[in-house]
Image 1 (tube, rainbow, N blue to C red):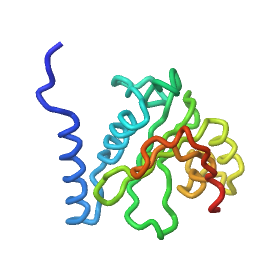
Image 2 (image 1 turned 30 degrees about the vertical axis):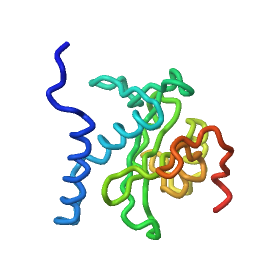
Image 3 (image 1 turned 60 degrees about the horizontal axis):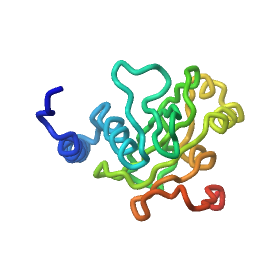
Image 4 (image 1 turned 60 degrees about the vertical axis):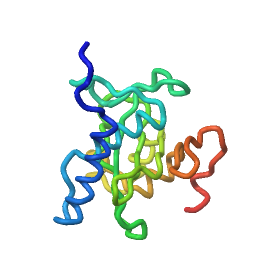
Length: 172
């Protein structure tokens, strides 16, 4: 195996800067960049191993450590204005195999500030309870709803939150 010509951490740092500057200049996001950054951060911050390409289907990573063997779908979302409602989680692969979904929230500089995890059963129950049948079929969910059904597992301030009891429903 040959050594990597580029250091992935440095490339991700450059991608963060480029994506942020592009958004500031154009008002649009660079397609796919937030997801690549989310996968990178999730793998490092919550101990996941990203699957090789081509992906096996419904999941992006396999858990290590306390998530050993868990099949994890990774979603990323850039939040520019936390007060603004209507943020949505990307389309969920509801018809494929996976065990949990990890959602990486990033600020305007594409730096992760919170990571949430929801188990498959909770996601399916939330989608089933949704009022919109069109959204059910697409596996769509609001960010607010995802936060309610998930648990906060990492914050920029505290790192991993897994060892603490955290009530994600207290503020809703």
